[in-house]
Amino acid sequence: MTRDDVLAYIRTLRDRQRHDQLVALRSLFTWAKRNGLIFRNPTSRIRVGQLEYAVLQPLVPEQVDRSVAAATTPATRLILALAAVHAARVAQIATLTLHDVDLGNRWLTVAGHARPIDDLTLKLLLAWLEHRRNRWPNTANLHLLINDQTATKTSRSSNHWISAAMRGLDATLERLRVDRQLEEALTHGPDPLHLAEVFGLDEKTAMRSADSARALMEQAAEQHLR
Image 1 (cartoon, rainbow, N blue to C red):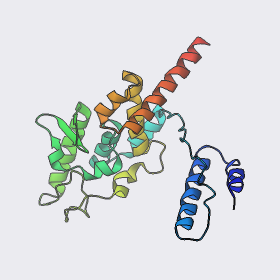
Image 2 (cartoon, rainbow, N blue to C red):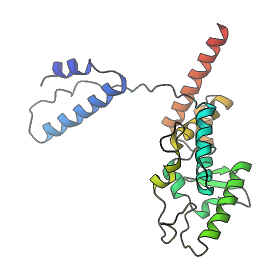
Image 3 (tube, helix red, strand yellow):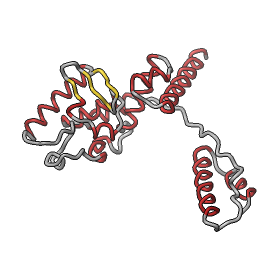
Image 4 (cartoon, one colour):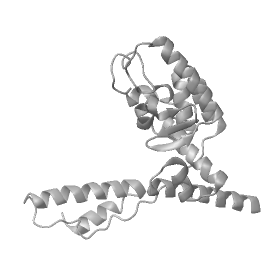
């Protein structure tokens, strides 16, 4: 296979598919050359380029309502709030411990980033902690969210259990998390520094949310002018 063969193939692809296929080919041919299976890497002078992400779209109220309706237990209601209000990832929710919750000062620490506890989250936290005490009064597990399996251990609950109630819905925990970041950017301005400070985001994630919010605001302005 020559460089021209690779170029001819990737010209048939678009966007993320092109990016992913080229990354895979580069990895494959790099390994083959390193192990002496080929003499020349046909992808060595082909640039992968920066992947252009699609503009993030906000959830519509009906999508959120269906997820709210699916949260029927104290645990799932709190999980929903942690994603939708505090933009916590599934794994971050699973690893929260009782030490991360400061009810007296109304602070919640998510992945090392302290956030103020709003009234809704406080209400759901108190309801869950009361349920937790009543159901597993003697548990030694310090993780905030536990179940029948983890209450007898000290390990965290699985990502699968955390996200189960919203699985298959439009507003999954991940979509709710992203939607919360997008809402913040639309409300307070598409400033990645602000998003990073509020949610403890890395630069790339903060910039993507800010760029999407800016694009949505520009689209709305254009439609208004028409």
